[in-house]
Length: 42
Image (cartoon, rainbow, N blue to C red; front, side):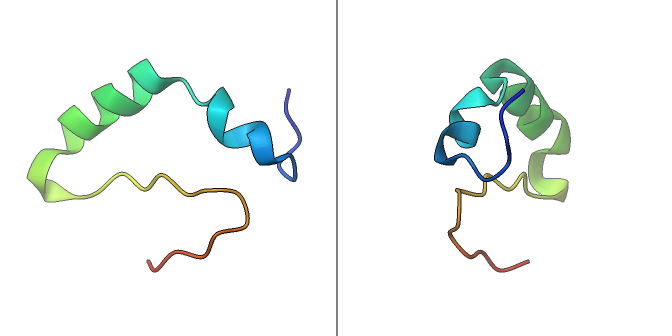
């Protein structure tokens, strides 16, 4: 397990699952890919 305050946590995501989720969501939504300590608008 990688602590959420570890900057490397982004690299622990299963990229195959992220890709499949983006395919399933398609144009109906957006899969966010937040970066450690970088703000994003929801």
